Image (cartoon, rainbow, N blue to C red; front, top):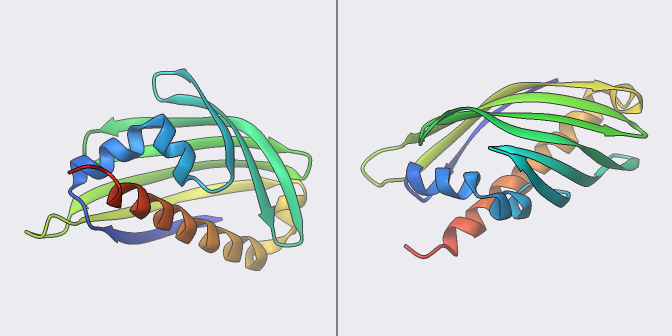
Length: 150
């Protein structure tokens, strides 16, 4: 399943970068994370509780921030396992200053591979869930940035 999109945040790229690189902030902005434990430089053990259409599951696995090019780009790699299936993702995230306003356009593009019951839910259900989670992520991120001291 392909994940791609863009979102504009009202903050400069270095502020968005710092927000995304902070473990505590990351735990607050990623939908469903109930636990995020740092295991190394930019690697984390995670537990996510997510409702996916008619089913819900608790996922355990790893998150990694890779290919860091501060403050412009990184790749989010996730490997999550649950009783209802597994998900592996690699999402390239780019941060670009929009114009002289200092806003940042966050663009993302990547692939998510699903197995088990997750794969059988189908593209329509999973597409809707991923759109909802993406909107929730950016809404949470925007709130975090709005509450940061300048």
